[in-house]
Image (cartoon, rainbow, N blue to C red; front, side, top):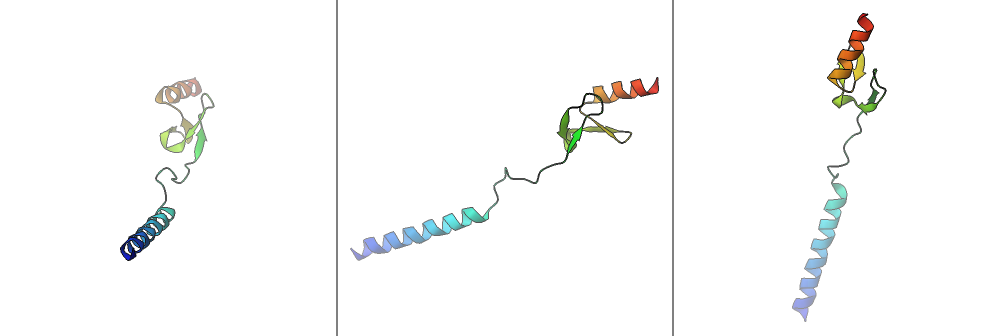
Length: 74
């Protein structure tokens, strides 16, 4: 009977340690938010890291960048 109580006590301590460890870790899906920018050509919002930048403006693709630059050169 005392062995059973000892095993239950050890299991409870291990459970509490695991629960405490899980609370203190930050899940990988909770990363810092990234700034959103507006495509100067079509107006779509996208993360700054995925955008293409030219002349201080942000674009959602190289095609939109090239098209916008051609329009401003006319």
